[in-house]
Length: 196
Image (cartoon, rainbow, N blue to C red):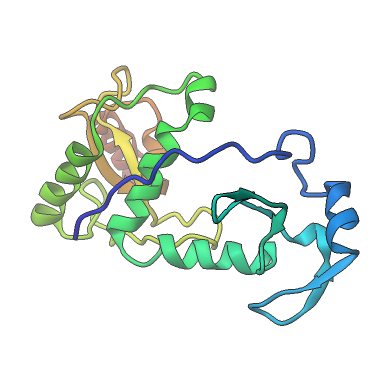
């Protein structure tokens, strides 16, 4: 299966002015409420996002047919379908501008290199976390699952470079933080031995 990053999308017209979706123009153009084509429930118009205004070569004000809740469920199902799709989303999140603005370490590997790293690890460990041995999951929409796959920088001082990324459980990644795997193992063993 070949995964490709989609084309760069246009910025939403009112997302910065109305981050909660309560743009008053929606009421002016479409009324107070709308029936969702997915769940069939009638909801406040603010529960529906704007749709691309470019339609058949013309500019036209449009709104989504599905409510925000149904669209979010669809997104979660899409990115939870398999490990590769889940990692595609993880890669996109690291690459986006908001991550750069938060001064997170940049990712220098291409998507193809990123996925090759995953395929090599999967061939060796399957879906098991290489540090904990736990089977990694790939479920969105259920909070921060501790077993979900996450991208770890082996050397936390370096960027997301070739040879410096691995895929481990979210909880293990949180525990490791900016330390080495050897440090994580040492302190984990010390805690266990102290309580045995």
